[in-house]
Amino acid sequence: MSFQPVKFYQTGTFTVGNRLLAENERSVQANMQRTNSLNSGHRACQGCGEALGARYAIDAAMRAAKNQVIAVNATGCLEVFSTPYPETSWQIPWIHSLFGNAAAVASGVAAAMRMKGRDDVRVIAQGGDGGTTDIGFGCLSGMFERNDDVLYLCYDNEAYMNTGVQRSSATPPAARTATTAAVGREPGNVFGTGKNVPLIAMAHGIPYVATASVANLRDLEYKVTRAMGIRGARYVHIHVPCPLGWGSLPEDTIKVARMAIESGLFPLFEAEYGEVTRRTTIRRQVPVTEYLKLQKRFAHLFGKEPDKARLERIQAVADRNIARFGLLG
Ligand SMILES: Cc1ncc(C[n+]2csc(CCOP(=O)(O)OP(=O)(O)O)c2C)c(N)n1
Ligand code: SF4
Image 1 (tube, rainbow, N blue to C red):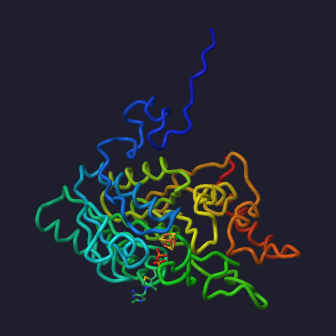
Image 2 (image 1 turned 30 degrees about the vertical axis):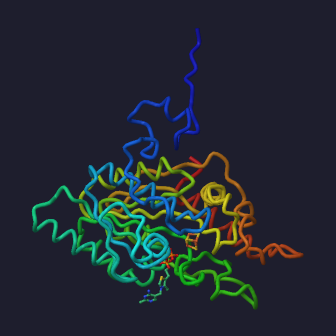
Image 3 (image 1 turned 90 degrees about the vertical axis):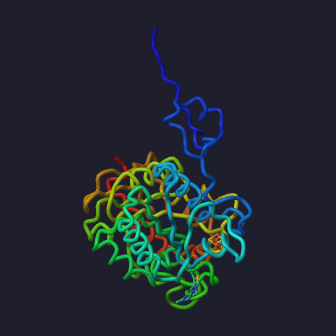
């Protein structure tokens, strides 16, 4: 008799499918022992990708470290919506210092733990793309270069959201922000600017670098767990749509994140010591327009006449990623 294994798709939460999986394959969030590190009651907007990503990432890290985690947070939405003094949604030791020094503070905490002989306590630094790719970049590079025993999590919502959606060096080309108006000869953010911090992290030769997305929460948990199993400097860059800044519907957060992956604009991969070791292939490449149309920050590309030239340039970015990382298998 022929045998066809049953494949469960909705395995991320408390769904039936997840409970039918073997215990070691279930998501951290599906387990009653999850730590709820970022608890309910915080003030993130509806559909905030950053809140979702942080909850999954830190709970996975807590499980991997047997609940011995200290987190250092850069200034930004995650810090502000979770910790309006004197309240906090964090259920873990958590420190906020400045906008740009999370990596340096985390290096200091890791050094203190080493001096105390507490190698069971693991240190995480986290921040938005502005705190990571711009103002905190020097501290982050130093942390990488010294190979400090810290996992850095960047929640990339592609702009400075907490202060009203200003452009960062992670803002994509053509995106409208408060500082890149959709007018003039080059509407939105200019092409050919910005930086790719996962690739820069790889250039430091650190033990582990990965990209992840809230569209694939099991993969996010896996990558954080993997990173926690390694000592030294580690970096995970998580794509987190921001309904407020991107002008997307709160209920579309996962869809928007998935379109970024399936168009090739946000490649998912892992790298060890500077070399790509694994990437997530795409079943069917979707045109970038499917992703862009869901967001008002790109609305100027779809006026009476679509801005063909800019759309083609964005498509070329996606196609280049697909070729570079071999995303079509
Ligand atoms: C030295 C300094 N400059 C500016 C600010 C104001 N500030 C606070 S949060 C923030 C934006 C944070 O953006 P990002 O790091 O991308 O995180 P997000 O809010 O998007 O999650 C800015 C500019 C500050 N706190 N400190
Ligand atoms: S502005 Fe964006 S990142 Fe900040 S809480 Fe709202 S949805 Fe989240």
